[in-house]
Image (cartoon, rainbow, N blue to C red; front, side, top):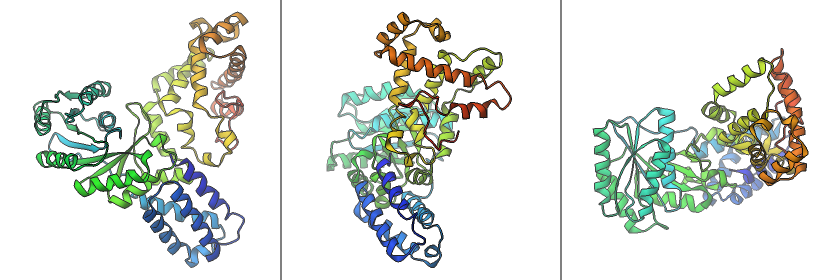
Amino acid sequence: MFNHLSERLNKVIKNLTGQGRLTEANIKDTLRDIRVALLEADVALPVANDFIAHIQDKAIGKEVIESLSPGQALIKLVHTELVTLMGEYNEALNLKAAAPAVILMAGLQGSGKTTTVAKLARHLQDKHKKSVLLASADIYRPAAIEQLKVLADAAGAAFFPSTTSDDPIAIVKNAIQQAKNKVIDVVILDTAGRLHIDDAMMDEIKRLHAAINPIETLFVVDSMTGQDAANTAKAFHDALPLTGIILTKADGDARGGAALSIRHLTGKPIKFMGVGEKIDALEAFHPDRIASRILGMGDILTLVEEAERHFDQSKAEKLVKKMKKGKTFDLEDFREQLKQIHNMGGVMGIMSKLPGMNQLPPNVKEQFNDKKITQIESIINSMTPKERRFPDLIRNSQKRRIALGSGTTVQVINQLLKQFSQMKKMMGKMSKKGGMMKLMRGMQGKFPFGGGGSLPPGMPF
């Protein structure tokens, strides 16, 4: 997300690097370029205009103009304004209600609303240790009820059954009553979506809201629809007392205009964003962290939180014990590490949160391809358990079989085995004094994820 905007903003600010000071002239030129970058990112025109006006008011002050680091001074101003624009801080769900706390989900058809209901259920269970019940009041799309049932099972949440012949208001009231009977903490209610906003849709959801008075009314919107997302959110805001917004498909939106426009147009906070298809691919929306990502400062806090959530500590300790006993790091171990990377959003998901990544040349970024991990996993999966444990013993006939099974070539197999051999030597240093630091330095140029088999310069190794 924000790839295009991030590249453009960093390019604009970099142009100030060679200038001694900020002046009214170069501020004017730079802000014009920033405005164009915002509009190209599909930020709503009034939002872009207000954004530039606020920065201009602050930038032409004496303190900034006399700054000896004009690029850094402007980055600070842009960062502050981005944070303000997106809401300053993450606004958590309000669950301070007599159980069950009721959450009503609204949105257009195709926005990912039903999937988001399940993701939110998983989030509440994992992060807040809440029991959750899901119910669908979408009686117009038979598959919607069955879809939510399947997703509820995947999320580990309870499910209240309903049918297309039921009354939506009766469904939600009965679901809440069942949650009370079973002492369930939270009820999340999925509602009918439409392909566009219409009066019948709005009337029904207004009646649902009035009947249950939910503590949270969340609008789910597809971030890839850009300005339309912001306009749709405003229409729902005018009809319903929204308490927050969830952006879906944020991982597929390279522009980010919706995230920058919605808060300004609706006054409602973005509480979460969907960052993938998996049931746990839901992130709390932190404006300060998002602003840092846009400006290439990274987002280490989110990266650490993801590592804590996905990293299997017991498996890591098991590997360390194995290495300390003098046993070799094998392809089974390596496959396990790849799974951990997958769980954290893949190589690009991790790299996007590291400082300075957006300043790397495109050809270096292309080396960090998640398809490469998938290919490596396919190769390892095509091996026998013995071959994974003793890769040095793999012969040409075996390589041909592995290549055939993984849809690759013998040359690709040879390249992987060579790079893995180098990595294994580095892993062998872990058990020695200062081993981890030596390992990190030694990994430079030997990690088989990039097309050229190397890490980009500037990585914190």
